[in-house]
Length: 79
Image (cartoon, rainbow, N blue to C red; front, side, top):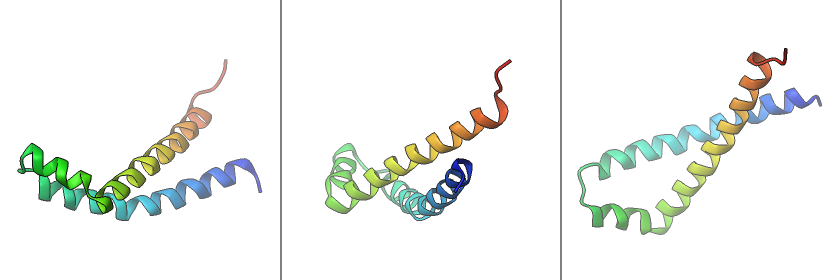
């Protein structure tokens, strides 16, 4: 399989994985928006929130790295 095909597949898979994590984060953000500092720390201290937020951050950085590399390959050329 060609390298660019692998990148394309990884980009599509990671974007599909990000959808439920982003939905969870948006719902969680809305629920903790008006809370106090202690309640927000408590929210991120519980095990499910820690794991889900950590996976979200890792997947965001993975997706970002893939898409930025595609931008450099497609639109920025050496003269």
